Length: 91
Ligand code: SF4
Image (cartoon, rainbow, N blue to C red):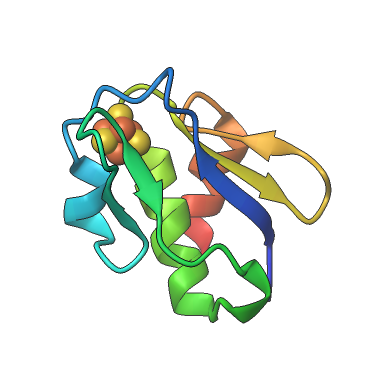
């Protein structure tokens, strides 16, 4: 089931220690200046359930809540959100 509408990294919140890249290297990469990360391929419509699960997992483990996930419900969640923690366990 597709549960993600969009996801992105808030570069002001990212501290660039690259945990997300270690967890999901196919979706996150170091940005050009090395001070944050960028998203590889933002077409959420193309994500399969395993990829959704990986993104939820990375977002739930971001220590600075920099990875934002907009759910199909319109709610935007990050690692500070109980909703994301619950979804990351379930997906
Ligand atoms: S895990 Fe979060 S803070 Fe760390 S590099 Fe990724 S987006 Fe930035």
